[in-house]
Amino acid sequence: MGRRSRYASPFGASVSVALAEARMTQTELAAKTGRSTAYVNQLITGHKKPSPEWVDLIADTLNLSPRERQGLHVAAAKQHGFKLDLTKK
Image 1 (spheres, rainbow, N blue to C red):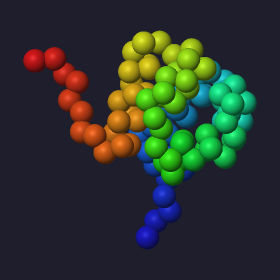
Image 2: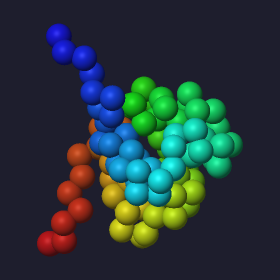
Image 3: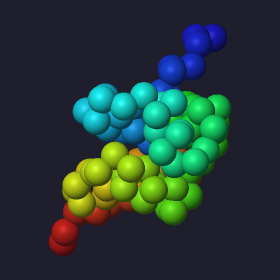
């Protein structure tokens, strides 16, 4: 069986992109959010599921736009197992 991807979750992949765009490391994100680097890494690698409050804290810390914030919430919801269709009818 193959090794699990470093960012196996949609949320982890989204946060990784946002971190890269903000030129911030997981360690810096952890320090700015008051959590350990290990905890932030567990969120990003999919070992822990982020709460909506955590998604907002990360979005605020990374100064994400409203659209990017929504994308991060959608990715977190997918990690929780929700199937979302946000298209307008």
